[in-house]
Image (cartoon, rainbow over all chains, first blue to last red; front, side, top):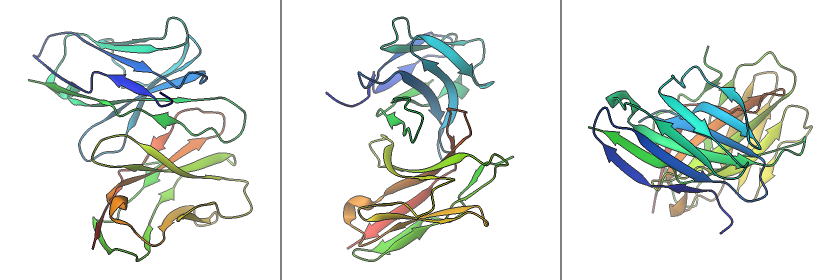
Length: 115
Length: 114
């Protein structure tokens, strides 16, 4: 498999529950990004890792959200005490830092529905 | 302030015709990159084409070309010879300077009809 893989593809959860999503980037890519996409909008940046270091977090990432990339490979995004406003598509992307054009390759996303 | 503006309503295009998708951007950084992504109903964002702010020529990738007008801050995507599989949402995005995140527009819906 040479693409970005995200699991699960769909998640339905009750308000107040915790959820965790996983992203497996392209194996040689050192950068990993999380974005959130709500209906009718483009993706919005949440956070970014270079190797295992989390280098940037958006103000969209409230304290209920936490992301990790413990060994610089796969990443997890956890949402605690989910709210209906968290319902969205969560997209993971990865890229290789080469100093030039570095397009990000995206996974198919995890669609979260909070009921 | 909106970094990327895509304001066209949904578009219907005849198969084999060309379609142009508008994108304007806002930045004061002289170094930036512009990207177009395609998002079919499956949800995956598929990279199409890239234009760097210092690139002298408009980018082309197969049936995709980017009409880059730097002074007007526009980066329109042209899809030639449309195919049914081109039906999707198309997003313009920008990366500024040394920042690694992408700022996306709201997208353009394209439906190709036979």
